[in-house]
Length: 332
Ligand code: GZL
Image 1 (cartoon, rainbow, N blue to C red):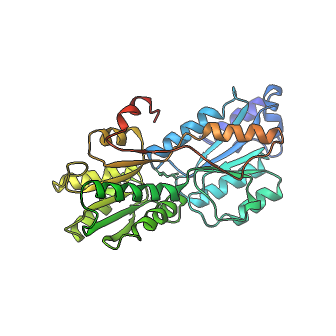
Image 2: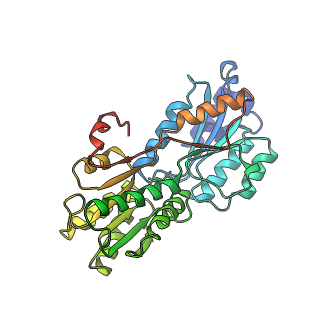
Image 3: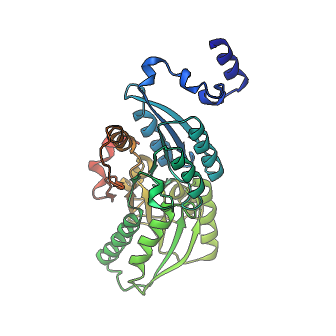
């Protein structure tokens, strides 16, 4: 059996262990010791950003054999179809739990009903799915609307401190993947604060998919279209890196002593160093280190303990005034 298994894996190229197992033989694949492992199918939405890499590393670094898990990890490369295929694969492999970060909120009812019918609990992580609560056990992630509000509240205070509360303020927004919880929440939160200021003018909100390349492209469009931008809101650091490339090419400065106020989200280390240099005015943290939260929930479910339907991770905002005391402790 070992020989046919090895041949199967070779023939399948880089397919995962489970892809090549003869149908119905999966249960023989784990050794006795492994029999006690909690088998988890994880569908990660992609690897589009530094944040996403840190999120994947946190999950893969926690759901280990040493910690009692057998992790089947799939990267969907930002495509919902790939996530649905992976989830169906987990169902056919009869994993103990399905964990996934939905690339966008819509379109999950059918596959999550299939998981429910198969008796496999589903845990959402990071982003949310717009489905009936009965189709998932719990969600772990960030309060994205609060993140957007925090950005708006910071801007209110910054404009007050710099004597610009009554000025006409022109704002452009680079949004993340349209329809993702992060884009929806951050947009709604910031809009809620901006709506209280008739002198704040959001000139345009444009999706840039959370990537540096698209962020640069969209910022170049904004610079061609709007000669008098006062504030750029960029819904993740990777897009912010693209914004800075576009600004630099035009000789426009940002930050504390710059021409344009720059607000970012995620707070990855590379961006926090720019906050410390005064290039980014504020970075709203979105904590990707969610592995331990997920492991804790899985242990509790294994012990038939209750878990909250929503579990928010701890976060804060970073400015040039406070970032120095945190930089050395950042793990991503
Ligand atoms: C936020 C997460 C977002 C990050 C981006 O919870 O969904 O996706 O802000 C990542 O960096 O691409």
